Length: 307
Image 1 (tube, one colour):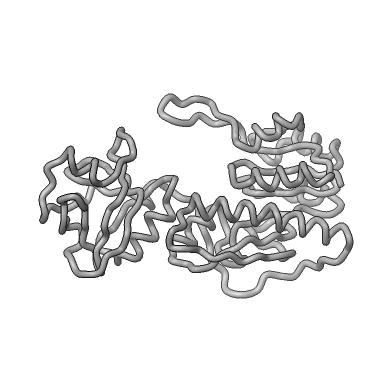
Image 2: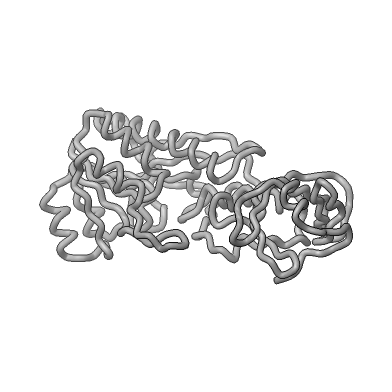
């Protein structure tokens, strides 16, 4: 089958690799334009572009989905199927109507829950215990298309958005191949989405700010869901500090007050206590709380700043 693959981040790589190993023909890869990253603002290609280049696949990086030259190139390629995995833009009707077997999307949630750009992160932040992968037949809405297949997986207390994302990426690749096989042999019927709908909007840096008035469990989930980007953060003596890893403790404390600063950094919340295990002061390396405390004169009773 002649397939055009749309994808951008690392999450999409296992799906593209699975297609390349399947015997189907990936005739082109469409991905987002290269972006400047890091302190030095180095122009960096998306992970999917690197995989495509290594395999000699035609790469398209349109700035707009509606560029006439881009639509014309897709028409010329004449795909039988388009596969979309975390591409980052909604496909217009001109693209959706091109392939004979439609546009198949691999989405990292059990739709209709967590439609949108950041389903993995918001599932953890909201304290979900289970999530999964959905393959769907795309329409013009935001993750509203009919469901093809779904697979559920557990979210453990040790999961971050990074670790859960890796597991879901592998699950997505496997489910994609099952979906294509069933479409090819005619055994798969798409069904409309049913149940309660929720949304997972794009993450913003401001969403990572810790509100110490929330429960310890909510802060624990925020820290896990925000890692590795943009990371949960707070302020101490007006210094911005990323909080990388924490654990929940029993007991009571005052929200934002440091209850222990000798070998362990324990902070009060609206309900329960948080022990900070790893953190990263602004402009410095990630470090253990022990290393952090050795270089500072923190005292029990100090408070984290509001800003």
